[in-house]
Length: 102
Image (cartoon, rainbow, N blue to C red; front, side, top):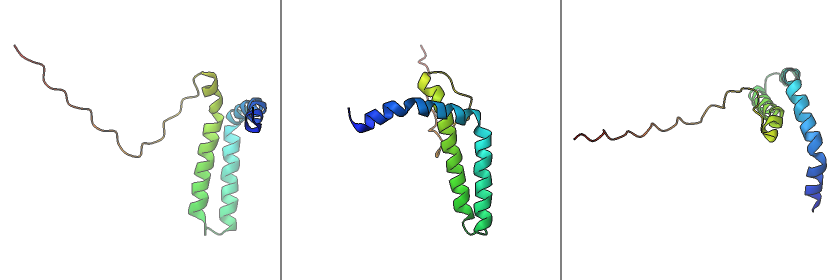
């Protein structure tokens, strides 16, 4: 067993606990992310506004995945979430041939 496997085994309980804490305090963490983004945007005087906004969105997405990870690992349903928007629309359903007539 390598170092990586050993570390994964030892950190697994901490990962589950952190996931539970993130799920419980998700709103507070998101508020902190938004607040940090506002301060960074104000400090840079809007020069990097689009990059800050992009980073904020990615951080919130990562938080959401991490917070809802605990339910997936145990096989229990997670809180209801809307799936991410698809990059392209699904293909139209194949049309079926008409039923044969006698």
